[in-house]
Amino acid sequence: MASLRIFVSSTCYDLAPIRGQIRSFISSMGYEPIMSDYNDILYDPRIHTHTSCIEEIATCDLILLIVGSRFGGRAIPEAISKIDFDALIDKSKSVDHLKKKDNISVTQLEVLKAVEIEIPIFTFIDNRLWNDHELYEKNKSKTILKDIEFPSIDKPETAEFIFEFINFLRHRTRGNSINTFGKFEDIEQALKKQWAGLFQRLLNETRNKQLETKRIDILTNQFEDLKTAILTSIGNTNEREVARSVVRFRRLIDILRSFKLSSYSQILNGNITWETFLREIVGVKDIINAEPFNTSGGQVMRLRTFLIKSDNTFYESRFNPDYIINELGPEFDAFTMLSTEVKHIVFDALNEMRGQMMPMIRYVNQDYREYLERNSKERRTTTPLFENEDTPTEN
Image (tube, rainbow, N blue to C red; front, top):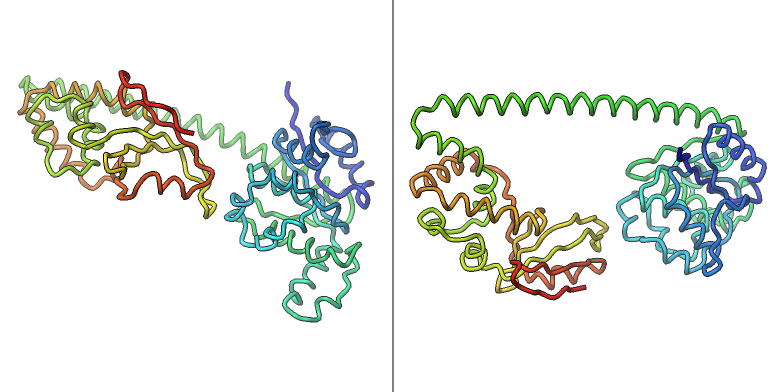
């Protein structure tokens, strides 16, 4: 059975006794402590030890952060390069000090990596340091600050870097809980309560999810029964076909309406193919599949599909290319095979019933190349619009 891996992040010299007690506590809980001073970290000889510590973070389930009197060693550039600082911009309301990357310690870098990849962090700050932090906050805008000596700080020149990192932690947009401690027992008691509460909530959420799944299944079956009852109660064959088509093609019609064409007569009055619709009516020449990336503002953009027009403007969709080509295609072809009368009735009915829905495909009147090039972490591939084409891959 896999064991919970808990990375203990702190300076070692000043906190060695507590680190030893924490190691025993974690092991007694049946979990696996990951600690640099006990050789639990893989120190790859091809990279610096700082970088090894950062890379180990991704293999762990929880981070236990202990903040004491020492700043620790400054992180080397190779380790710093492993952090996506743009992704941290919206993680806290206090991030200005992160721009001074030369003043980030290895311990801080470990925590930043955990924040970046959203690993839970349990933070404990020495009582004396926490009291001095309050004094720092009240005086940091005053010139007198440089003359203040904080008893809890081992090296006065590192005080600002430690206190501002505490601000980063306490001003996080989530996961900003901070505990203080005077002795190891304070940490032990807090962790027992927190981990027990977290486990209880997980059990409750699992149980509630199962109940919600059952309710959805019941509602789905009731809907199917209701749909069947309605369809069988319709005596006229043509009316029954209309009813079935309204149910079946509602998503397809929503997607067609999203293109906001001036006329849909070629669809409703003819038997064109899905390929003809995309190429000749909408004007799509390529489909771009853009993978998730961080924008310059730190916002995470989810996987999207771009339908590129001949003028290089584009439609944006969250449907993947396979769905657009291989699933919507047969549905479109089945719809166009209906009689002209039924197509008009179905389209008009759904247009009226679902007229205020958010469009499933959005038109963007920008050159897609300029749009993507503004995002340096963007990766994209060009998907052949139809299987008989061989469109090269873009990286």
